[in-house]
Image (tube, rainbow, N blue to C red; front, side, top):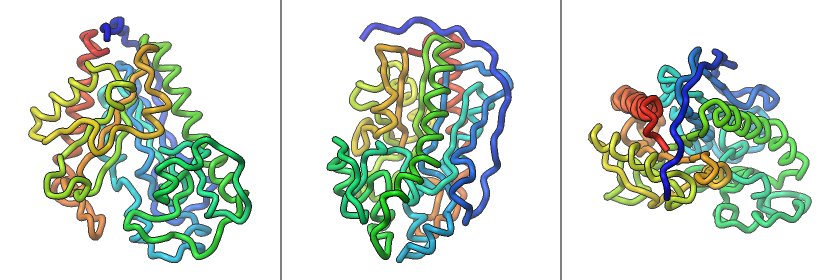
Length: 306
Protein backbone atom coordinates (compact mmCIF):
# COMPACT_ATOMS: atom_id res chain seq x y z
CA UNK A 1 0.00 0.00 0.00
CA UNK A 2 1.34 3.42 -0.90
CA UNK A 3 2.33 5.85 1.86
CA UNK A 4 -0.27 8.44 2.77
CA UNK A 5 0.14 12.21 2.40
CA UNK A 6 1.97 14.08 5.24
CA UNK A 7 0.02 15.75 8.05
CA UNK A 8 -0.26 19.39 9.02
CA UNK A 9 -0.83 19.71 12.81
CA UNK A 10 -3.00 22.57 14.02
CA UNK A 11 -4.53 23.81 17.25
CA UNK A 12 -7.71 22.64 18.90
CA UNK A 13 -9.78 23.77 21.87
CA UNK A 14 -9.86 22.46 25.40
CA UNK A 15 -12.92 20.62 26.56
CA UNK A 16 -13.50 18.14 29.36
CA UNK A 17 -16.93 16.64 29.90
CA UNK A 18 -18.22 15.01 33.07
CA UNK A 19 -16.00 13.33 35.65
CA UNK A 20 -16.26 9.58 36.11
CA UNK A 21 -18.11 8.41 39.21
CA UNK A 22 -18.87 5.24 41.07
CA UNK A 23 -21.98 3.13 40.32
CA UNK A 24 -24.91 3.18 40.35
CA UNK A 25 -25.96 6.02 38.04
CA UNK A 26 -29.08 6.68 35.96
CA UNK A 27 -28.92 5.76 32.29
CA UNK A 28 -29.72 9.28 31.08
CA UNK A 29 -26.41 10.68 32.33
CA UNK A 30 -23.77 11.39 29.66
CA UNK A 31 -22.54 8.22 28.01
CA UNK A 32 -18.92 9.31 27.79
CA UNK A 33 -16.13 11.61 28.90
CA UNK A 34 -14.40 13.55 26.13
CA UNK A 35 -11.09 15.31 26.74
CA UNK A 36 -9.47 17.42 24.05
CA UNK A 37 -6.18 19.21 24.69
CA UNK A 38 -5.71 22.94 24.54
CA UNK A 39 -3.45 22.46 21.52
CA UNK A 40 -4.55 19.65 19.22
CA UNK A 41 -1.15 18.77 17.73
CA UNK A 42 -1.75 15.26 16.39
CA UNK A 43 -4.42 13.46 14.35
CA UNK A 44 -4.89 10.92 17.15
CA UNK A 45 -8.05 9.76 18.88
CA UNK A 46 -7.86 7.29 21.75
CA UNK A 47 -11.22 5.64 22.50
CA UNK A 48 -12.15 3.31 25.36
CA UNK A 49 -15.63 1.82 24.81
CA UNK A 50 -15.54 -0.88 27.51
CA UNK A 51 -14.09 0.85 30.58
CA UNK A 52 -17.35 2.38 31.85
CA UNK A 53 -18.08 1.87 35.54
CA UNK A 54 -21.67 3.13 35.75
CA UNK A 55 -24.23 0.47 36.63
CA UNK A 56 -27.80 1.83 36.47
CA UNK A 57 -30.19 0.71 39.20
CA UNK A 58 -32.42 -0.92 36.60
CA UNK A 59 -29.58 -3.21 35.52
CA UNK A 60 -28.64 -4.13 39.07
CA UNK A 61 -32.29 -4.82 39.87
CA UNK A 62 -32.75 -7.14 36.89
CA UNK A 63 -29.43 -8.96 37.24
CA UNK A 64 -29.22 -12.45 38.70
CA UNK A 65 -25.46 -12.10 39.26
CA UNK A 66 -23.34 -10.01 41.61
CA UNK A 67 -21.81 -6.65 40.77
CA UNK A 68 -18.32 -8.16 40.67
CA UNK A 69 -19.53 -10.64 38.04
CA UNK A 70 -20.97 -7.79 35.98
CA UNK A 71 -17.72 -5.89 36.36
CA UNK A 72 -15.74 -8.76 34.86
CA UNK A 73 -17.15 -7.58 31.52
CA UNK A 74 -15.26 -4.30 31.93
CA UNK A 75 -11.96 -3.32 30.44
CA UNK A 76 -11.16 -2.19 33.93
CA UNK A 77 -9.34 1.16 34.17
CA UNK A 78 -8.31 1.22 30.51
CA UNK A 79 -9.60 4.80 30.42
CA UNK A 80 -7.03 5.66 33.10
CA UNK A 81 -4.22 3.94 31.22
CA UNK A 82 -4.71 6.17 28.17
CA UNK A 83 -5.93 9.41 29.78
CA UNK A 84 -2.55 11.10 29.48
CA UNK A 85 -2.65 10.81 25.67
CA UNK A 86 -4.32 14.24 25.78
CA UNK A 87 -1.01 15.67 27.00
CA UNK A 88 0.47 14.62 23.66
CA UNK A 89 -2.08 16.39 21.50
CA UNK A 90 -4.67 13.60 21.14
CA UNK A 91 -8.39 13.51 21.83
CA UNK A 92 -9.48 10.93 24.41
CA UNK A 93 -13.01 9.49 24.43
CA UNK A 94 -14.01 7.14 27.26
CA UNK A 95 -17.35 5.46 27.87
CA UNK A 96 -18.84 5.88 31.34
CA UNK A 97 -21.71 3.37 31.11
CA UNK A 98 -20.94 -0.26 31.82
CA UNK A 99 -20.42 -2.68 28.96
CA UNK A 100 -22.86 -5.07 30.66
CA UNK A 101 -25.57 -2.43 30.09
CA UNK A 102 -24.79 -1.78 26.42
CA UNK A 103 -21.73 -2.75 24.40
CA UNK A 104 -20.37 0.16 22.37
CA UNK A 105 -18.06 -2.08 20.35
CA UNK A 106 -21.00 -3.82 18.69
CA UNK A 107 -23.30 -2.98 15.83
CA UNK A 108 -26.64 -1.82 17.27
CA UNK A 109 -28.32 -4.54 15.21
CA UNK A 110 -26.44 -7.25 17.11
CA UNK A 111 -29.42 -8.16 19.30
CA UNK A 112 -30.07 -11.71 20.45
CA UNK A 113 -33.77 -12.49 19.69
CA UNK A 114 -33.87 -14.94 22.59
CA UNK A 115 -33.27 -12.14 25.10
CA UNK A 116 -36.39 -10.13 24.34
CA UNK A 117 -40.14 -10.45 24.75
CA UNK A 118 -40.64 -9.18 21.18
CA UNK A 119 -38.59 -10.09 18.15
CA UNK A 120 -36.08 -7.38 17.14
CA UNK A 121 -36.27 -5.93 13.63
CA UNK A 122 -34.38 -7.93 11.05
CA UNK A 123 -30.67 -7.16 10.94
CA UNK A 124 -27.88 -8.91 9.03
CA UNK A 125 -25.88 -8.71 12.27
CA UNK A 126 -28.41 -10.55 14.45
CA UNK A 127 -26.75 -13.92 13.93
CA UNK A 128 -23.14 -12.78 14.26
CA UNK A 129 -20.72 -14.98 16.22
CA UNK A 130 -20.70 -12.34 18.96
CA UNK A 131 -24.49 -12.54 19.36
CA UNK A 132 -24.36 -16.33 19.37
CA UNK A 133 -21.75 -16.17 22.13
CA UNK A 134 -24.05 -13.99 24.24
CA UNK A 135 -22.01 -10.85 23.64
CA UNK A 136 -24.25 -8.70 21.45
CA UNK A 137 -25.05 -5.00 21.77
CA UNK A 138 -27.09 -5.88 24.87
CA UNK A 139 -24.97 -8.66 26.40
CA UNK A 140 -26.68 -11.83 27.59
CA UNK A 141 -23.71 -13.03 29.64
CA UNK A 142 -21.09 -11.29 31.74
CA UNK A 143 -17.34 -11.63 31.67
CA UNK A 144 -17.27 -14.84 33.72
CA UNK A 145 -19.82 -16.54 31.45
CA UNK A 146 -22.89 -16.29 33.70
CA UNK A 147 -26.28 -15.22 32.34
CA UNK A 148 -27.02 -11.66 33.41
CA UNK A 149 -30.81 -11.42 33.52
CA UNK A 150 -33.56 -13.03 35.55
CA UNK A 151 -36.09 -12.58 32.75
CA UNK A 152 -36.47 -11.53 29.14
CA UNK A 153 -36.19 -7.81 28.43
CA UNK A 154 -38.62 -5.70 26.45
CA UNK A 155 -37.40 -4.63 23.04
CA UNK A 156 -38.14 -1.01 23.97
CA UNK A 157 -35.58 -1.32 26.78
CA UNK A 158 -32.87 -2.34 24.31
CA UNK A 159 -33.83 0.46 21.95
CA UNK A 160 -33.72 3.00 24.80
CA UNK A 161 -30.22 1.92 25.83
CA UNK A 162 -29.00 2.18 22.26
CA UNK A 163 -30.59 5.63 21.83
CA UNK A 164 -29.28 7.03 25.13
CA UNK A 165 -25.82 5.46 25.26
CA UNK A 166 -24.69 3.77 22.05
CA UNK A 167 -25.81 6.43 19.59
CA UNK A 168 -24.38 9.49 21.42
CA UNK A 169 -21.02 7.79 21.84
CA UNK A 170 -20.74 6.89 18.16
CA UNK A 171 -22.10 10.24 17.00
CA UNK A 172 -19.31 11.88 19.00
CA UNK A 173 -16.67 9.47 17.74
CA UNK A 174 -17.75 9.94 14.14
CA UNK A 175 -17.65 13.71 14.59
CA UNK A 176 -14.18 13.56 16.12
CA UNK A 177 -12.90 11.52 13.20
CA UNK A 178 -14.37 13.93 10.64
CA UNK A 179 -13.00 16.96 12.50
CA UNK A 180 -9.57 15.39 12.89
CA UNK A 181 -9.34 14.45 9.22
CA UNK A 182 -10.35 17.97 8.22
CA UNK A 183 -7.67 19.50 10.45
CA UNK A 184 -4.79 17.14 9.73
CA UNK A 185 -5.54 15.41 6.46
CA UNK A 186 -6.02 12.05 8.16
CA UNK A 187 -7.22 10.53 11.42
CA UNK A 188 -5.77 7.71 13.52
CA UNK A 189 -8.18 6.05 15.93
CA UNK A 190 -6.68 3.82 18.64
CA UNK A 191 -9.44 1.65 20.11
CA UNK A 192 -8.30 0.68 23.61
CA UNK A 193 -9.21 -2.57 25.37
CA UNK A 194 -7.97 -5.14 27.85
CA UNK A 195 -8.02 -8.92 27.64
CA UNK A 196 -8.01 -11.65 30.29
CA UNK A 197 -4.66 -13.27 30.89
CA UNK A 198 -6.26 -16.58 29.86
CA UNK A 199 -6.92 -15.30 26.32
CA UNK A 200 -4.19 -17.54 24.91
CA UNK A 201 -3.41 -19.74 27.88
CA UNK A 202 0.08 -19.76 29.30
CA UNK A 203 1.47 -18.10 26.19
CA UNK A 204 -0.76 -15.02 26.27
CA UNK A 205 1.04 -11.97 24.86
CA UNK A 206 1.23 -8.76 26.83
CA UNK A 207 -0.43 -6.76 24.07
CA UNK A 208 -2.35 -7.64 20.91
CA UNK A 209 -2.59 -5.10 18.09
CA UNK A 210 -5.56 -5.61 15.77
CA UNK A 211 -5.78 -3.94 12.36
CA UNK A 212 -8.09 -6.51 10.77
CA UNK A 213 -5.07 -7.94 8.95
CA UNK A 214 -4.27 -4.58 7.37
CA UNK A 215 -7.84 -3.70 6.34
CA UNK A 216 -8.45 -1.04 9.00
CA UNK A 217 -5.06 0.63 9.41
CA UNK A 218 -2.03 1.59 7.32
CA UNK A 219 0.93 -0.74 8.07
CA UNK A 220 3.12 2.21 9.11
CA UNK A 221 0.84 2.94 12.07
CA UNK A 222 0.68 -0.67 13.26
CA UNK A 223 4.41 -1.14 12.81
CA UNK A 224 5.25 2.01 14.76
CA UNK A 225 2.96 0.97 17.61
CA UNK A 226 4.46 -2.52 17.69
CA UNK A 227 8.04 -1.28 17.61
CA UNK A 228 7.37 1.23 20.39
CA UNK A 229 5.74 -1.34 22.63
CA UNK A 230 8.50 -3.89 22.03
CA UNK A 231 11.12 -1.29 22.98
CA UNK A 232 9.21 -0.80 26.21
CA UNK A 233 9.58 -4.50 26.96
CA UNK A 234 6.18 -5.90 25.96
CA UNK A 235 5.50 -9.12 24.10
CA UNK A 236 3.34 -8.02 21.19
CA UNK A 237 1.16 -10.06 18.83
CA UNK A 238 -0.85 -8.98 15.82
CA UNK A 239 -4.45 -9.92 15.07
CA UNK A 240 -4.52 -13.07 17.20
CA UNK A 241 -6.64 -13.69 19.11
CA UNK A 242 -8.18 -10.23 18.51
CA UNK A 243 -8.11 -8.70 15.04
CA UNK A 244 -10.48 -5.83 15.74
CA UNK A 245 -14.18 -5.38 16.39
CA UNK A 246 -17.09 -3.18 15.36
CA UNK A 247 -15.17 0.06 15.88
CA UNK A 248 -12.17 -0.83 13.74
CA UNK A 249 -14.39 -2.40 11.10
CA UNK A 250 -16.71 0.61 10.95
CA UNK A 251 -14.21 3.47 11.01
CA UNK A 252 -10.98 2.05 9.62
CA UNK A 253 -10.70 3.24 6.01
CA UNK A 254 -6.99 3.52 5.16
CA UNK A 255 -7.69 4.44 1.53
CA UNK A 256 -9.66 7.43 2.86
CA UNK A 257 -6.90 8.34 5.35
CA UNK A 258 -8.81 7.13 8.37
CA UNK A 259 -6.92 4.46 10.29
CA UNK A 260 -8.28 2.36 13.17
CA UNK A 261 -6.01 0.22 15.34
CA UNK A 262 -7.26 -1.91 18.23
CA UNK A 263 -5.00 -2.47 21.23
CA UNK A 264 -5.65 -5.20 23.82
CA UNK A 265 -3.64 -5.13 27.05
CA UNK A 266 -3.23 -8.23 29.20
CA UNK A 267 -5.09 -7.39 32.42
CA UNK A 268 -2.65 -9.32 34.57
CA UNK A 269 -0.12 -6.56 33.87
CA UNK A 270 -1.99 -3.97 35.90
CA UNK A 271 -5.03 -5.38 37.72
CA UNK A 272 -5.89 -8.25 40.05
CA UNK A 273 -8.25 -10.23 37.82
CA UNK A 274 -10.08 -11.74 40.79
CA UNK A 275 -10.83 -8.53 42.72
CA UNK A 276 -10.41 -6.01 39.85
CA UNK A 277 -8.21 -3.89 42.08
CA UNK A 278 -5.31 -1.98 40.56
CA UNK A 279 -1.91 -3.55 41.18
CA UNK A 280 1.54 -1.99 41.31
CA UNK A 281 1.80 -2.58 37.56
CA UNK A 282 -0.90 0.01 36.86
CA UNK A 283 1.52 2.94 37.12
CA UNK A 284 4.02 1.33 34.76
CA UNK A 285 1.44 0.46 32.11
CA UNK A 286 -0.10 3.92 32.31
CA UNK A 287 3.32 5.55 31.86
CA UNK A 288 4.08 3.28 28.92
CA UNK A 289 0.79 4.02 27.18
CA UNK A 290 1.68 7.70 27.50
CA UNK A 291 4.98 6.89 25.78
CA UNK A 292 3.06 5.13 23.01
CA UNK A 293 0.90 8.22 22.53
CA UNK A 294 4.04 10.36 22.52
CA UNK A 295 5.67 8.18 19.84
CA UNK A 296 2.60 8.31 17.59
CA UNK A 297 2.30 12.06 18.11
CA UNK A 298 6.00 12.61 17.32
CA UNK A 299 5.64 10.61 14.12
CA UNK A 300 2.76 12.87 13.10
CA UNK A 301 4.77 15.98 13.87
CA UNK A 302 7.61 14.67 11.71
CA UNK A 303 5.13 13.82 8.95
CA UNK A 304 6.02 10.15 8.97
CA UNK A 305 2.76 8.67 10.29
CA UNK A 306 0.43 7.16 7.66
